[in-house]
Amino acid sequence: MAEAKKLFIKTYGCQMNVYDSERMVEAMGAQGYEQTERAEDADMILLNTCHIREKAAEKVYSELGRMKPLKAAKPDLKIGVAGCVAQAEGEEIMRRQPLVDLVVGPQSYHRLPQMEEKIRTGAKALETDFPQEDKFLHLPKERLPKKGPTAFLTVQEGCDKFCAFCVVPYTRGAEVSRPAERLLGEARALVERGVREITLLGQNVNAYHGEGEGGTWGLARLIRTMAKIDGLERIRFTTSHPNDMEDDLIAAHGDCEKLMPYLHLPVQSGSDKILKLMNRKHTAESYLRLIERIRGARPDLMLSGDFIVGFPGETEADFQDTLALVEAVGYGQAYSFKYSARPGTPAAERPGVDAAEADDRLQRLQALLGRQQKAAQDAMVGREVKVLFEKAGRLEGQLVGKSEYLHAVHCDAPAEMSGTIQKVRITNSSSNSLGGTLVSGAA
Ligand code: SAH
Ligand code: SF4
Ligand code: F3S
Image (cartoon, rainbow, N blue to C red; front, side, top):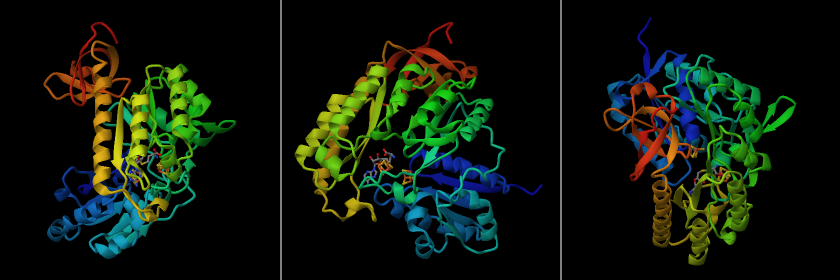
């Protein structure tokens, strides 16, 4: 057999891109490629890009610029751009950076093998359509063995919500849910390969409405059915929109044991005026009531969120409303961003907030969120949690894994425990992780 060609893939952006990159590695595996961690060894380089915030596209162009010497040293090297910048910029990428051979949008990855054959002949290849078919349907059935006990599974893609700041509805297209049977089949296959925890992914995952036995299934039904798979221990899902938290999904947090007590539920702002300008279709109050109901079902729920500061029209008073909402909720962890105008989105046309003011608000918000994160971590000390060990830890003899609450936990444990769930007593909390000791005799 000819020596395998090498594929280097660099992933930016969200977990959906991480999942897609894995699928692309598999698709290219069928074309005789194996993955390499070194760009200089590659026969093909793929950048799986993100367009969510400013300069994301510029970052891609500068990364491409840095590839010139690689291409000069190896003229056969093929360079491709995938992901949301590919979708947003299309052909423009090849015009601006002629060394790019291939541009493929997120809904066209099943075409990669043919595209690879095309660029081998020296031609360029571009695919940015939104086909009406499941892009994962055509990927090879033979999956690579999973590298660890956790896996992502994309159940839903795209978004119909059109928040005024966001490119996702344009780069990922309309909301599409994958059929339940297929997802259950993929979940079973993952479990057979040793996966113990599956995170269901979607830009709007709780809007899932896939075809299943007897009609359309919501996310709760998918989760409850998936939970029946023997050997699957944990289910998570991300990212959710507050307006799609249906009763059954809230209830599942209370009665579905395998559904983990962690929820990423972005609110973006605590000001009703700003929420309206963002086209979020919920208020601060309705979000707080929702959180109350979910906590009613699962009192120990760990909450996470996303925030944007400096959205056009945001005053100091609006920002104070955001701080007040954060105080009222108490997040275990959260992401916060300075608003960045995205071409083509409604908010991009509006006059922005002073940049220094926005920076200052971001700092103040991050300080508060940081304190809450630390408090939530510190509160774990002395408690017993269950950790799914994923891999070797920082120190010799240690394993690291995640608690139910998605905290990283380091612990002295034998290597054979990797891939298993163990009871751990938390003994210390450091900046981004917890430390603990095995609770003896337990599993
Ligand atoms: N579908 C998810 C996540 C979308 S992108 C959701 O609806 O929550 C992830 C986060 O990036 C968003 O929640 C938002 O906080 C942030 N984001 C999106 N567009 C942005 C923009 N133009 N400027 C700054 N942050 C943005
Ligand atoms: Fe973007 Fe809003 Fe859709 Fe989330 S819900 S992907 S923020 S448009
Ligand atoms: Fe980025 Fe696209 Fe994900 S813009 S956040 S990679 S959906």
